[in-house]
Length: 432
Ligand SMILES: Cc1cc2nc3c(=O)[nH]c(=O)nc-3n(C[C@H](O)[C@H](O)[C@H](O)COP(=O)(O)OP(=O)(O)OC[C@H]3O[C@@H](n4cnc5c(N)ncnc54)[C@H](O)[C@@H]3O)c2cc1C
Image (cartoon, rainbow, N blue to C red; front, side, top):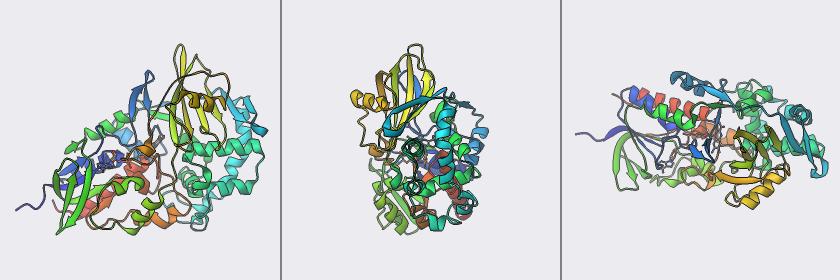
């Protein structure tokens, strides 16, 4: 008598789930992927809006991200550069708007960007081991603590802090210094390279095309619009209950739910302590990514206000004949109503007063119950306290998510790493 319907149920068809399912299926196990959404890709989503294919979630990739790059090579996908900015806007002392070349802006931010990660080699000697090194002592600090210790003049402080809001998507007193250190450690200690990684090259055909390429390679069913509501571990078999009433019996489950969303399933027993703790606290990131169409062909620019503004980062991405599409990031999704054109116009005016906002679009990932997160950044202390435990299997349940990756945690690369890791563990223990 068979005690199971499939060998493995993978919950989630984002990058972690798709890669795990492909590896498990290719390794000879029956695999079923269940996702609550009506599409694959999870926190990446290329959608046609404002007349363009826009990335509403994860976008930028780089060849120093080994897991991402291996997948792009495998599927023959190319990258294209977001065109470089010709002009820069930032705030001077007393918040007076400044305008200059990108080189001018670099002279404002260069020294402090280096100083906040000066000790990266001692903090995290190997990017692949983000909890080993002086990080153990430093993890109590926030990025804000580092900036406060530098005691920068207002102009440098505003721009530098805004740059980091762009990276970590939250007010800086909420985010562990670990996020700055681990990603710069992943680029061999070079902050300029880390900046390039997180904002320069996008995948030709979009992230949804990338996810679709992996999905097409999964030797098993991917069932969409199927929310998992309950998982029960009973007598060597897992019962996976769905919102439509279906119950699937499996030998293993891979959960790819983000830390913030893990409570969306009734696990029928107490989750491991690290998952309960981290889900209760929530991770740090909580911001917005907004696409804004403005009138006219605007010369390519980048702008930074401060972390106190609803939008801290603004840059031109796509230029049409009579309009330009900008992308912006802010630290707090509750600080800006992206459906209110006047609010968005005011947020744009803080960078420069010559742009007329025509249309706006965004996806509120924080309000999305299947994500409840943008890209994961840790609060102070969470990385060293929880990472190892979050990677541990819990009986027959495994956890693969960018949120528990070692190298590029928070990025697509981390999602792929985690999917490969958990598939390998399962293949080593489940007989075919
Ligand atoms: C605005 C934004 C910008 C970003 N920018 C970048 C970037 O430039 N570069 C980069 O590398 N990364 C970026 N990221 C991060 C990157 O997108 C994520 O780290 C990565 O996509 C996470 O993949 P994952 O598979 O771990 O999780 P997810 O993609 O979140 O996948 C989890 C899946 O589980 C499903 N799920 C959740 N609950 C249930 C349930 N109960 N039942 C069934 N299914 C469920 C969800 O629908 C989802 O599809 C960004 C993210 C956002 C939101």
